[in-house]
Length: 245
Image (tube, rainbow, N blue to C red; front, side, top):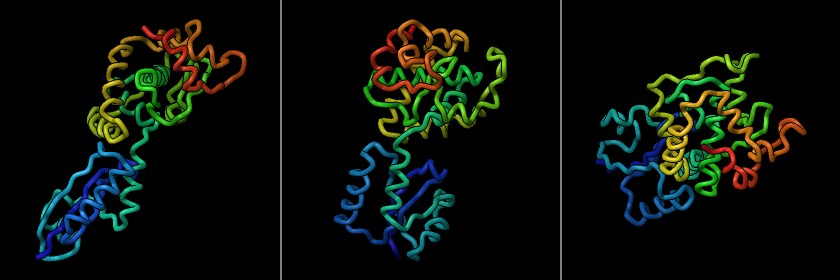
């Protein structure tokens, strides 16, 4: 009989749960592995430990013993296991946008503004970025490039009539879990929901007008003088107060 010690985590970047399987692991080695994972990825990661006895050293025997592990991808290298978890620690603007439209179907234009406002609110409250995308000053206000690239097909010539963007409501939990898996995920999720509650009822045009207010980050980025200027974190921190309600 073999005693499996299984380190289990989620890797959203490969869309799978991942595991490392150790046999008859000593307490000393357990502590060493756990400390190596958390020192790189943080102590707030979604990591669970499972002990399962089977008559084989193989991870396949674990899957046969407990269907809970059937769709889990076994990772052989601790370095690869850590890197897969670490990749999930940073969010992208598109991941935040997907969470937004799983809650509130909206137009592409409104989605851009809501994603930006979630970023700006979180940055000003926590002095750290919500996600790792650059934000650009387009004609109609702040735009996250990855969100624009994904949903630009939904943007018609008449911006008041652009198509609705939405995710099936049954995808809300995966998108929420993805945010929770990121660094300071709970704080990020709370901040995002707080921002959405504040702005969700405003129309796209009203959100455009909000981000175009005098002395806003969009205006102070040089928008209007030169196309597609980057709106820096420093600019948002200094001028976001002029575009809030």
